[in-house]
Image (tube, rainbow, N blue to C red):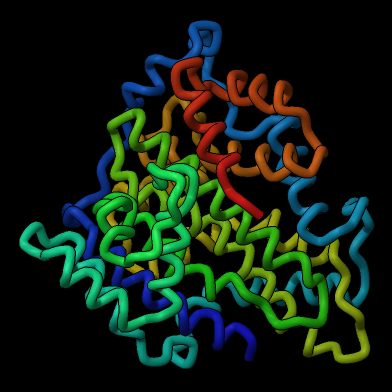
Length: 356
C-alpha cells in the first residue's frame, strides 16, 4: 500500500520529538491564555475571535484549489466517490497504527539531534555526522547560503563554516525539514502538483510558527516548527489514504473534490492521531486538541497559537506569491485574527521567505 511507504518514514519524527521533549506530566495541562494573546489588538479583546470564519475557510479552500490545480471544489459527491469518502473516514484510526507501516527507522538523524542538543558536542563532531548523509550535507550548505544566514558575498562551500553560521537553532530547524521532506512525496499519476504545493505550504507554515514561538518567547521554536509541518503532513496522509481507497474501485477515476472533502473533514483529527502515535509532549497534544475543539486563538495555549497563526500566514503567503491574494489583504486578515502589529511583520517575512 502507498500508505505503508509513507508512514514508514514518519517514524523518524517520533525519535526526533522524543529527543527534544521537555518531559510529560501526569495529566495534560489546562491551556491558559498566553501573554501574546493578552497583548492582541485591543479591538479584538471585546470578544473572542472565532477559530474559523468565512474568510479563513475561504483561504484554506483556495490553497486546496491551488494544490489540486482546480477552480471548483463544490461538486456534489455521489456514488462510488461517496463510498471512497466513507471508507476514508472509517479507516482513520487504523491508518496510523498498522505495524506494517513502520519499518526500521534510520539512525543518523536522531544521533545528529542528540549531538546538537548536547552542549559538549564539538562542531567537528556535528560535521562528521552530517557528512554521513551527502543529501543532508547538501541541504546544510544550501541553507547556509540562503539570504538569512549568509553574511558575505562569497558562497559558503565549507561544511564546518556552514554549521557555524547555522548554529544550534538553525541546525535543529533544518532537521525538521530534512526528516519530513521525503514523507511529503506522493506517487506520480494523479494531481502531481499536490505534493510540491503541500510541502511549500508546510515550510511556510513551519517558518511562521517557529518565528511566532521565538518572538513571543512562550513556546519551543523547534516544537512549533515540527507541529506546523505536522498539520500539513496530515494532508499527505489523507491524500494517500484516499488514493488507497480509490484502488478498491479500479474502474473509477479519482476526483479532486473527494480528496479535498477528506482533507477538510479529517485533517485536524488525523494530525491529532499522528501526534498520539508519536507520543508527543503534553503541550503539543493540547495544541492539537485545541484545533479539534475549535478554540478561539485568543484562548489557545502558546503552542496552539504558534500553529494557528503559522498556518494562516503560510496559507496567505502561498496564495500571495501566486497572485491569488494581495499582500495588503493578507496582513489585514492576520490583524483581524488577532496577530499584533508587533508580531505581524516578522511572521509575514518568515512565511514569505520560502524560495520555490
